[in-house]
Each structure stands twice: as C-alpha cells, then as structure tokens.
Image (cartoon, rainbow, N blue to C red; front, side):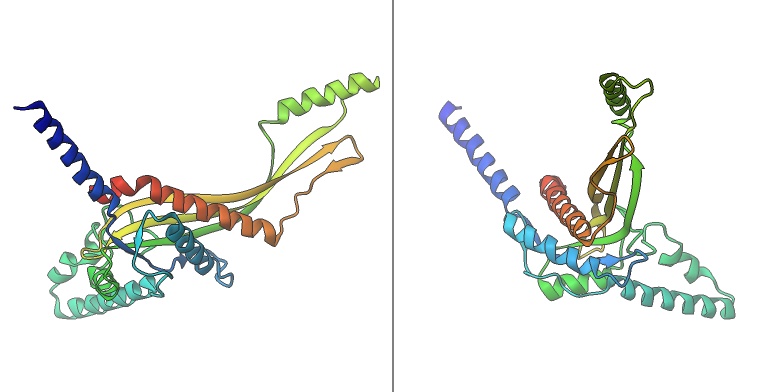
Length: 262
C-alpha cells in the first residue's frame, strides 16, 4: 500500500478520534445536596453556583444550562423509599414476600441514598431520565456536601525544626534552657462527594471525594512573641469553599476523557 495513503488514513483516524474526544456529551449540573449538620448555611447552593461558573469558563464541558438546576433528587428518592415501605406492609399482609425480596430495596446495585451512591450503583432511572429529558442532557453532574469541619493541630512536620530553632535561639541568647518555639495550624475543611450519573440509566459512572481547605499558622517564640492566630473566620470559610470549587472543576476536567469514552 502506498505510504502516503497509510499516513493519510492514520491522520484521518486521529482526527476523528480527536473530534470525538473534544465533543463532550451534554451535561447538566444538579444543585448539590447538603448532608452536613450545618443545614442553615447555604453551602451546597453556593458551591453549585461556583462550580457551574468555573466549568463554563473552562469550556471543557458542554453544559446545557448556565445555572444549576433546582431538583432535589434526595427527596424524590425518599418518596420512592416510602412507596417501598408501603409495599412491605402489603407483602406482609398478603403473605407473599417475593416482590419485596426481588425489588430494589434488597438489591445492592441500587443506591439506598444519594449521599451513599457509589460508582456502578444505580440511582432511580425514573428520576434521572426525567431530568435528562427535561434538559436534553446525557449526564448529570451532582455532588453531596458531606462535611464542613474545623480544627487546630500541632505542625508535626515543623516540630523538629522548631526544636532546632529554639535551641539555636537559646544558645544565641546565652540561656541554659531551650527557648519555646511552637507552631499551631488551624483551618476549615469542606468535603464533597462528587459523582457523574448517566441520565438514561441512573448509573453512577464516575465519582470522587474532593476536599477543599484553608489553613493558617500561629507561631510562638518564647513567652511573649506571638505571630498569627488560630481564630477561624468567615473569610477562611469562603476561601475553603473556593478551594473546593477549584478542585472539583480540576478533577472533572482531568478525568473527562476517561469518563466519557468508557
């Protein structure tokens, strides 16, 4: 075969593959759920808005809506569970438990809740296909805010360095005992379980846990010198949310080819 024809075929195939990769399937972002104890803080909605904004700016995803869609999948799943409970009573009264044991409630393939849905499990196609059809979306991007936490801890990595600095300061000052040199790190963390769902089947085809955080360091030298603070502020919370948003978007972009070509 002519070498030019072989090369032309290779380039044509590469071009087709490249166009398929770049043409991402249509997606819609469903407003995130808040599964933390801080329900009064509108963190999930804020996070959803930030993620959509950054995804659109990236140009890497074909989002069919420029805003998160307000659809409470968790409450819809709860309604389905209520129907299943009703079926249990009917099964017990009738003495025929076959339909009960064969239903989704006893099938590990079906996720029991949105917050616990794992890759490979199915979230009710009745719900996901309805969302997909309504918005002409092949995939749903959804996340669950599972934890907002704070803490203060010793800087373990800097502990040995701190002792060394303390000893050096002691020698320099002529003191017989080490001078205190201590560092404490405090911060706020935002933990999100992120997933992509195939709308037509309800299957969770991809999922990852993402953690965003903002930390600060307080340094103490001797008894009187203190630099920094461990006090947590609303600004730190906002910065932790921004960090989580960026990590969510970076993770989705990094895995998009593998996600949509499998």
